[in-house]
Amino acid sequence: MNRTAFSVGEYIRLSREDGDKAESDSIGNQKKLLADYIKRQESFSVYDIYVDDGFSGITYDRPAFRRMINDIENGKVNCVIVKDLSRFGRDYIETGRYLERYFPEQNVRFISVTDHIDSFVQAYDMLLPIKNIFNEQYARDISRKIHASIRTKQQAGEFIGAFASYGYRKSPSDKNKLVIDEYAAAVVRQIFELYNRGYGKLRIAALLNKEGILCPSAYKNANGEPYKNAFHADTSSFWSYSTISRILQNELYVGNMVQGRKTQHMRGKAKTKQKKDWVIVQGTHDAIIEMETWQKTQDLLKQRTRNLDLTSSPSVFAGFLKCGDCGRALAKKNGTSDTFYYCGSYVRSGRQSCTPHKISYKILEHILLDDLNAILHSIKNLDEIIQTLLNAAPIMAHKFESEKKKIETELERIRKLKKSTYEDFREELLSREEFLAYRQDYTDREELLSTQLASLQKKEHPEKTSDIETAPWIQHLLTHHGIEKLDREIVTAMLHEIIVYENCKITIRYCFSDSHIDL
Image 1 (cartoon, rainbow, N blue to C red):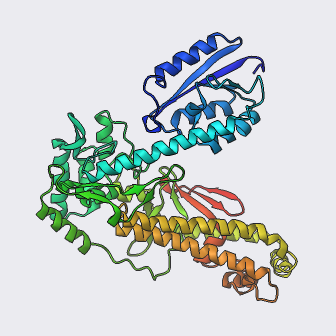
Image 2: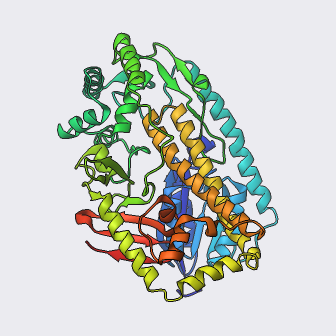
C-alpha cells in the first residue's frame, strides 16, 4: 500500500448512555462532518464506514470497532478518522494504548477532526491524555446517574430490560410495562403443565423441538428482535435442558418483576448478586402461571434434584473427550457390558442439535494402548531416557520456575471458573445437576494441576523422593517396557484431548505430538 495514499476507515459511535447529544453527535451529523473533511484532503479514499450505534465508549468490545481493527490488521485500512476523541472511546487508558502504541505499530494515521489531532502532521498534543481523562470522568459521572435512575425504576416495578422474558412483550404504549404475549405464554403454561405431570426437563425440550416450536431466542429473532442467548451453544437454536430449567424457576411468570440480578462497573465483567440483593416487586403485571401451580413446581424442583456421588473417582477420560462437530464435551453412559460416550448436545437436545458421535470406552482404550505402546517400543533407549530424567532432577531444578508459573496461572484460572460456577448456581442460571457436574470437572482439573505443581516442587528439592520414581505406571514401564492398562494418571500425563467424529473417527492430541487415527 502506497504510504502517501490513505485507505480511510471512518469510525462513528453514538450512545445515549454516555450522555451523547442527539443533534450534534447524531450518526448523520458525524457522517456529514467526516465526509466534508475527507473531500478537502488529497490521496484519501474511503474503504469503509464503521458505525456503532448504541454502544458505550467505556468498552472497546463493539462490533464495528472490532471489524475496523480486523481490517487494519489485514492491511485494508491505514487511516482512522473520527469526529472527536469521545467518539473513539471514553476509557483514557485504552484510548491512549491505541493512539500511542497500537496505531503507530500498525503504521496507521489517526485523525480526530474537531480536536485538531493528526498523527501524520505532528506528534500527539500534550493535552491528549488530559482530554482522554476528561472523557472518562464524564462517562463515569453519566454512568453513576444512569445506575441511580435504573435502580429507582427497578424499585418502582418498571421494566428496564432490552428484551422481555419469553411469554411477555413490552407494552406498545409504555416500554416499562410488560404485557402477555399469548402465543409464547401458551408455551410457558405447557412447560409448567408437563413438568407437573411428571415430564423431565430433557423430555419437555425434546417434545417442544419435535413439535417445531421455536425456542425463546429464535422466537425473538423471528419477531424482529436482535436477541442473542448467551446460554445457548453457538450451533444450537433448539430448546434445551437449561432453557426449560430457567423458565420453571422464573418468578416473573407469577406477576412479580425480578430485576437487578447483576451489577457492572465501567471496567470489568458483570457480577452476579446474591438473591437477597435482587429487586423484586410483586404484582407489577398479569401473571401467566397461577401461584398454586408455581408453588407446586418449585416443590417438585427441590424433590427431583439428584444427589450426585462426588466422592467416586472420575472417569478415565473425563474432560478429554470433545465432539468434533459442535465442540461440546462428550457425556458418559454406562451400558451392560461397556461404557459409551455421546455428544453432550445430542444428549441434551437430540438430533436437531447434533448427532450421537457414539464411541465405546473399550474401543478408546484399545486404540490408546496400541498407539502409546507403539510409540514407547519405538524408543530404543527408553531405560536410559527415564533414568536420565530421574538423575537430572536436581541439576534441572532452576528450569522449573517458568513451568511452575504456567501451572500456577492455570490453577488460579480454574479456581476462578469454579467460583463463578457457584455464583451462576446461586443466581439460578444453572441447575443443581449442571452446577455439580461443572464443579466436578473443575475439581478434577484443579487436582491434576495441584499434583503437577507438587511434582515440580519436589524436583526442586532432590533430597525428597521423586514422584516419577513412585508412580506405578512409570515403575511398570521400566520393568515391562509398556503399558498394560489405562488409568487417570496415564491419560492426564499423556493426552491433551481426544476429538470424536461420527463413524468412530477420532483425533488424538498428545502432550508431545498430534496423531490422527481413522477406525
